[in-house]
Length: 275
Image (tube, rainbow, N blue to C red; front, side):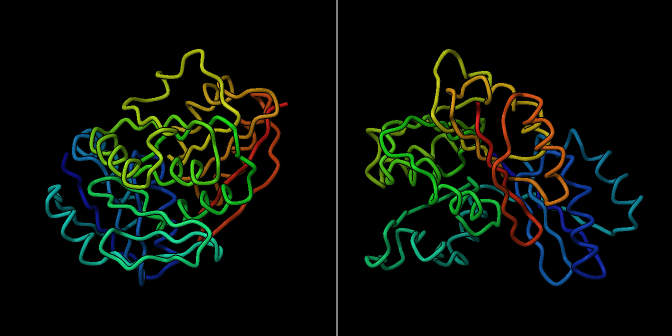
């Protein structure tokens, strides 16, 4: 599947963050901001659908833009050429197979993302990793929805979770997540699945991890709440700091109690518990 890279020219970082907030209403999978230039990535099919609305939004803000198609093979080459290992909270190292190992870290995750998002470099993935490092998941059952590379499900398994369903709507993500799960030796406890929240049936979980975007979180939070056992934890990211009130309000409406929030570079995560 091809992606579209939208490049938005803004005069400074503050304007780039405003543009990012405006674009977060559309189904972009990832954003990058540097020196006032914002890049947003979206599936090519989705771009065709929302392009007129996005361009009208950008015109209203006075932001010039260009866009280009990124074929899967080119995306892989660009990623491999630029990807550097990262560490989170001094406990978890995330690297590619061609990097040297990090034996001194408590957890090491080897990820080859191909067309899937979730290397830990984006603030939202880092926020989710940080949250997961503080949670007691040993012996528990979880759901990772919008799983991408499978990084969160893999970390949960490495932290002792008994079983995790890892769901993503994208075929590339399903295939890549399956590869990464096997490469990290947790295929016995992580089950990759292709689809969306409609896959959730009668299974119940002790924790749910949802790193997607504001619109999908608001639309599907009821399903996540329904899939949680009493006392279970829901952690959400893929949202901006400005989205926290809307996310927490919907969580409260659904019987989830917001317990913690974290922010990084304008992005946020929210943790809730079901009582």
